[in-house]
Amino acid sequence: MTPVRITILGSTGSIGLNTLDVIARHPDRFVVYALSAHSRIEQLAAQALQTRARVVIVPTDQAAAVFKTAWPAGVLPPEIRVGQQALADTAAEAHTDVVMAAIVGAAGLPSALAAAQAGKRVLLANKEALVAAGSLFMAAVKESGAELLPIDSEHNAIFQCLPHDNRASAPTGPCAGVRRLILTASGGPFRTKKWHQLTDITPDQACAHPNWSMGRKISVDSATMLNKGLEVIEAHWLFAMPADRIHVVIHPQSVVHSMVEYEDGSVLAQLGQPDMRTPIAYGLGFPERIASGVGILDLALAGRLDFEQPDLEQFPCLKLSFEALRCGQGACISLNAANEIAVAAFLGGKLAYTDIASMIESTLTWHAGQTFRALTSLDEVMALDAEARLRATKWMST
Ligand code: NAD
Ligand code: MG
Image 1 (tube, rainbow, N blue to C red):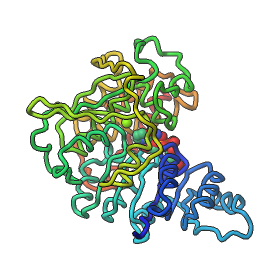
Image 2 (cartoon, rainbow, N blue to C red; image 1 turned 90 degrees about the vertical axis):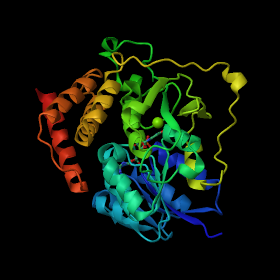
Image 3 (tube, protein in one colour; image 1 turned 135 degrees about the vertical axis):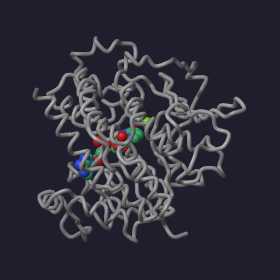
């Protein structure tokens, strides 16, 4: 069998590292074609050396110089490509069979979209792409015949629980016989606290997720549950499901990764340890099941599984996400943009934790006062994204 050539966009991140871990378990099956990183360029060089990647993509000429310095003398280096456009071009080029889209934030949208337009197998970890440009992205998948495999654990679980012959990559409507999608959420580190008690939370406290080890941005999103809000929007696009048929239930143990409820009352769930290598291996091997390195799930050891209704007053960011989804794509772009600005400011010590929700709310109010505009191209989406970011940044200085 000819090895499948993989491009990992965001290879130094949490998803990137887990992907490399799974790939390394199947040396005959996969080869790494390209890797990218935005910072930690020395780590990128070590990864490229180990995997013998043919191409690396870095953000600037300065980063390219760091890469060259880090590369050992006497070893043939990979081709170094520079800049945003190189990410999209590499994702779309003929030498790439599979793209792992694991760049964090809306910055990952252009390259994920390019992979979809080029008809690749797209392993979509980046959720902001669907939140900001769901209709554009799904239309590209449909038109090119790309294979879209969701990697976010909840969506991967739902994908696994849907009827096999109905899992078209770009569905035109909800799967027949499906009544609801039920996304599970751990509730994060502040599940038992009230929102107003959280004003003095530090970035390290917010990033201390009880079950999952992830990048810092998504860890903060998990604490505010804005992450679940993004996932509801993501599920809406991936599975063509209206907002009122997507439900969220808090499940503190993170063993049930999500569920599909059918018209006959059956509920199918996917269970497993909270380890992203399971959905990554599923996407890499699909339709085959391949080893991921994840250990067994011992339910007797887990003992009990709890479920509770989320309190939208306790998690205002989740409430704002449902509101944005009901308002439409422009509101979702504004929600995501404001959140990225807010979380970066919070992680940088410039914004209180509870002001994350205030900044998002203010940006959504600004967006509601805007006149309707077309969002049918990447440029139009990115222009609104940039405007919403400016708006959110301005809110911080007032
Ligand atoms: P991370 O912060 O650990 O890694 C992000 C990667 O993107 C790094 O390689 C970084 O160099 C690169 N990057 C950052 N900014 C960039 C930019 N402006 N341009 C190009 N590259 C850039 O993030 P992560 O936790 O691996 O998450 C990646 C994506 O996957 C996010 O969208 C996240 O929501 C999603 N996701 C992550 C998990 C998880 O368990 N970590 C689970 C589900 C979904
Ligand atoms: Mg998730």
